[in-house]
Image 1 (spheres, one colour):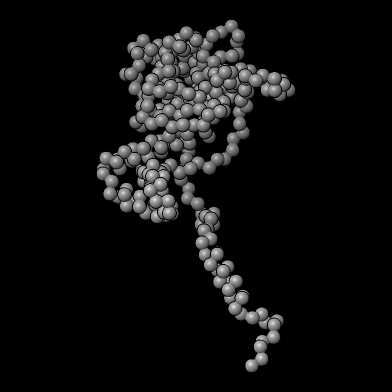
Image 2 (cartoon, rainbow, N blue to C red):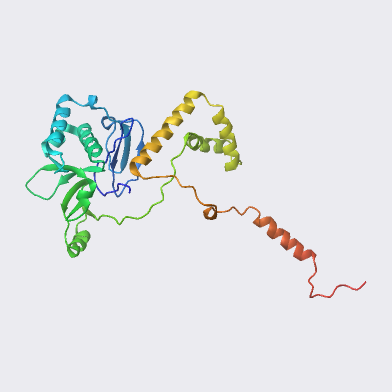
Length: 290
């Protein structure tokens, strides 16, 4: 099930090379992918997917100590949601927030997210916990000025009234689960061909896609080991990202009955039938007398 919420959320899962993925969904911008970047090297924008390497040594010692103490004190078998004050949330910064989310996601083996606590008007605090805790039961997520806020779920009639009257507030109902088609992750050659297809087409616009594939296949076989290794690494990152989003993914090739057949020979057959019908006299017409 993909982790999609109309909010400023951070969802992370652990992988073998400690690659993290922060997903900050939004209803407006599309998802973008940036490889090999840490949270401190790029600006977290709603709707952006960031894949990078998380290293605790990169954190400030004070931030690392606060994040570790908070996790050890509040995360246990009786409690799966952590609350921090707004001041501490700002103090630990994006790296600390990502570290805490990564650690919790690894311990609970669930997608987690940060959200602002909107259940109490007096408290200035942020909560970190499994996504399902914020979008099920009596709770829901609303996006106020791009910030995810967890609130109590109102009655349906109030929800309809507020949705039409509040222009700056967007209510996010938990979507109904549905079966989605997960595309197969691209391999190294597919990524190589994707990067160069447009350039080859621009050099010779008369080339068909099959001819371009043949040219790029020969070029790929002649590439240096460094280039091939770079695209192999990119393909590995694509596969790891897909397994984060869809842990139960299994490649299942289409059945022969499901494949669409190309109708290349339809036109020649049709033209042959037309020529034949024109050359052969109709049996209803009398043959000419000799």
